[in-house]
Length: 108
Length: 114
Image (cartoon, rainbow over all chains, first blue to last red; front, side):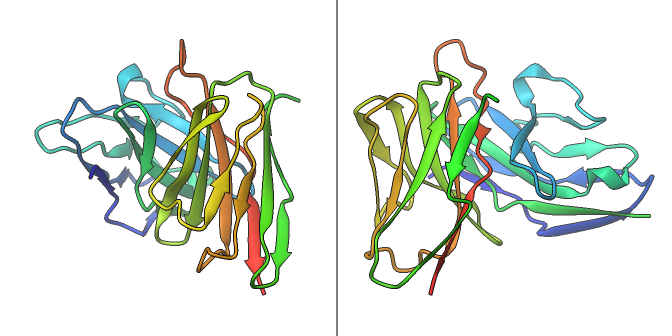
């Protein structure tokens, strides 16, 4: 079975500090990976996908096939970044498999 | 207002009763999905459908049933056979051909079994 692992349930950082949300995956094919975010009282939405190699709201994520990782990074955290973050992997193009999620709390 | 609409937002059910959650999309998306969200477990796939009149089981389909009679609608029935139905349920859709792989989500339905 394909798996997505997010080892941290909660990550708490101070405003202005760097953020790294970890995601590791296991997949036998060429992975298609995403980060989704759920802000308080809002619906789950796409943050970024590895194939586009873009930066959204200052966040970036690099696919490391050797380490099977897709960590989400931001150099300077802001209070509005506080949310639940999910890493997700398309399984053979049919099913999007999610990790358990990491709550990011940015303290002032 | 385009997007995915789930109803009801909150639902209470007595043990032994079936309940149906509605999911409608006006995005003309091919595929629709039902996920269950539990604290500490992330989102787990219940059922998905890539075309009208066809659907497949996800990872936790036991105790649930779905139908896809229309492209825009994908209702989920939580049956009395589901052992632990109290949860937050999310519906999603995506465009397959020409799409980017992005799922678009509804606001969710919270089911509580009394």
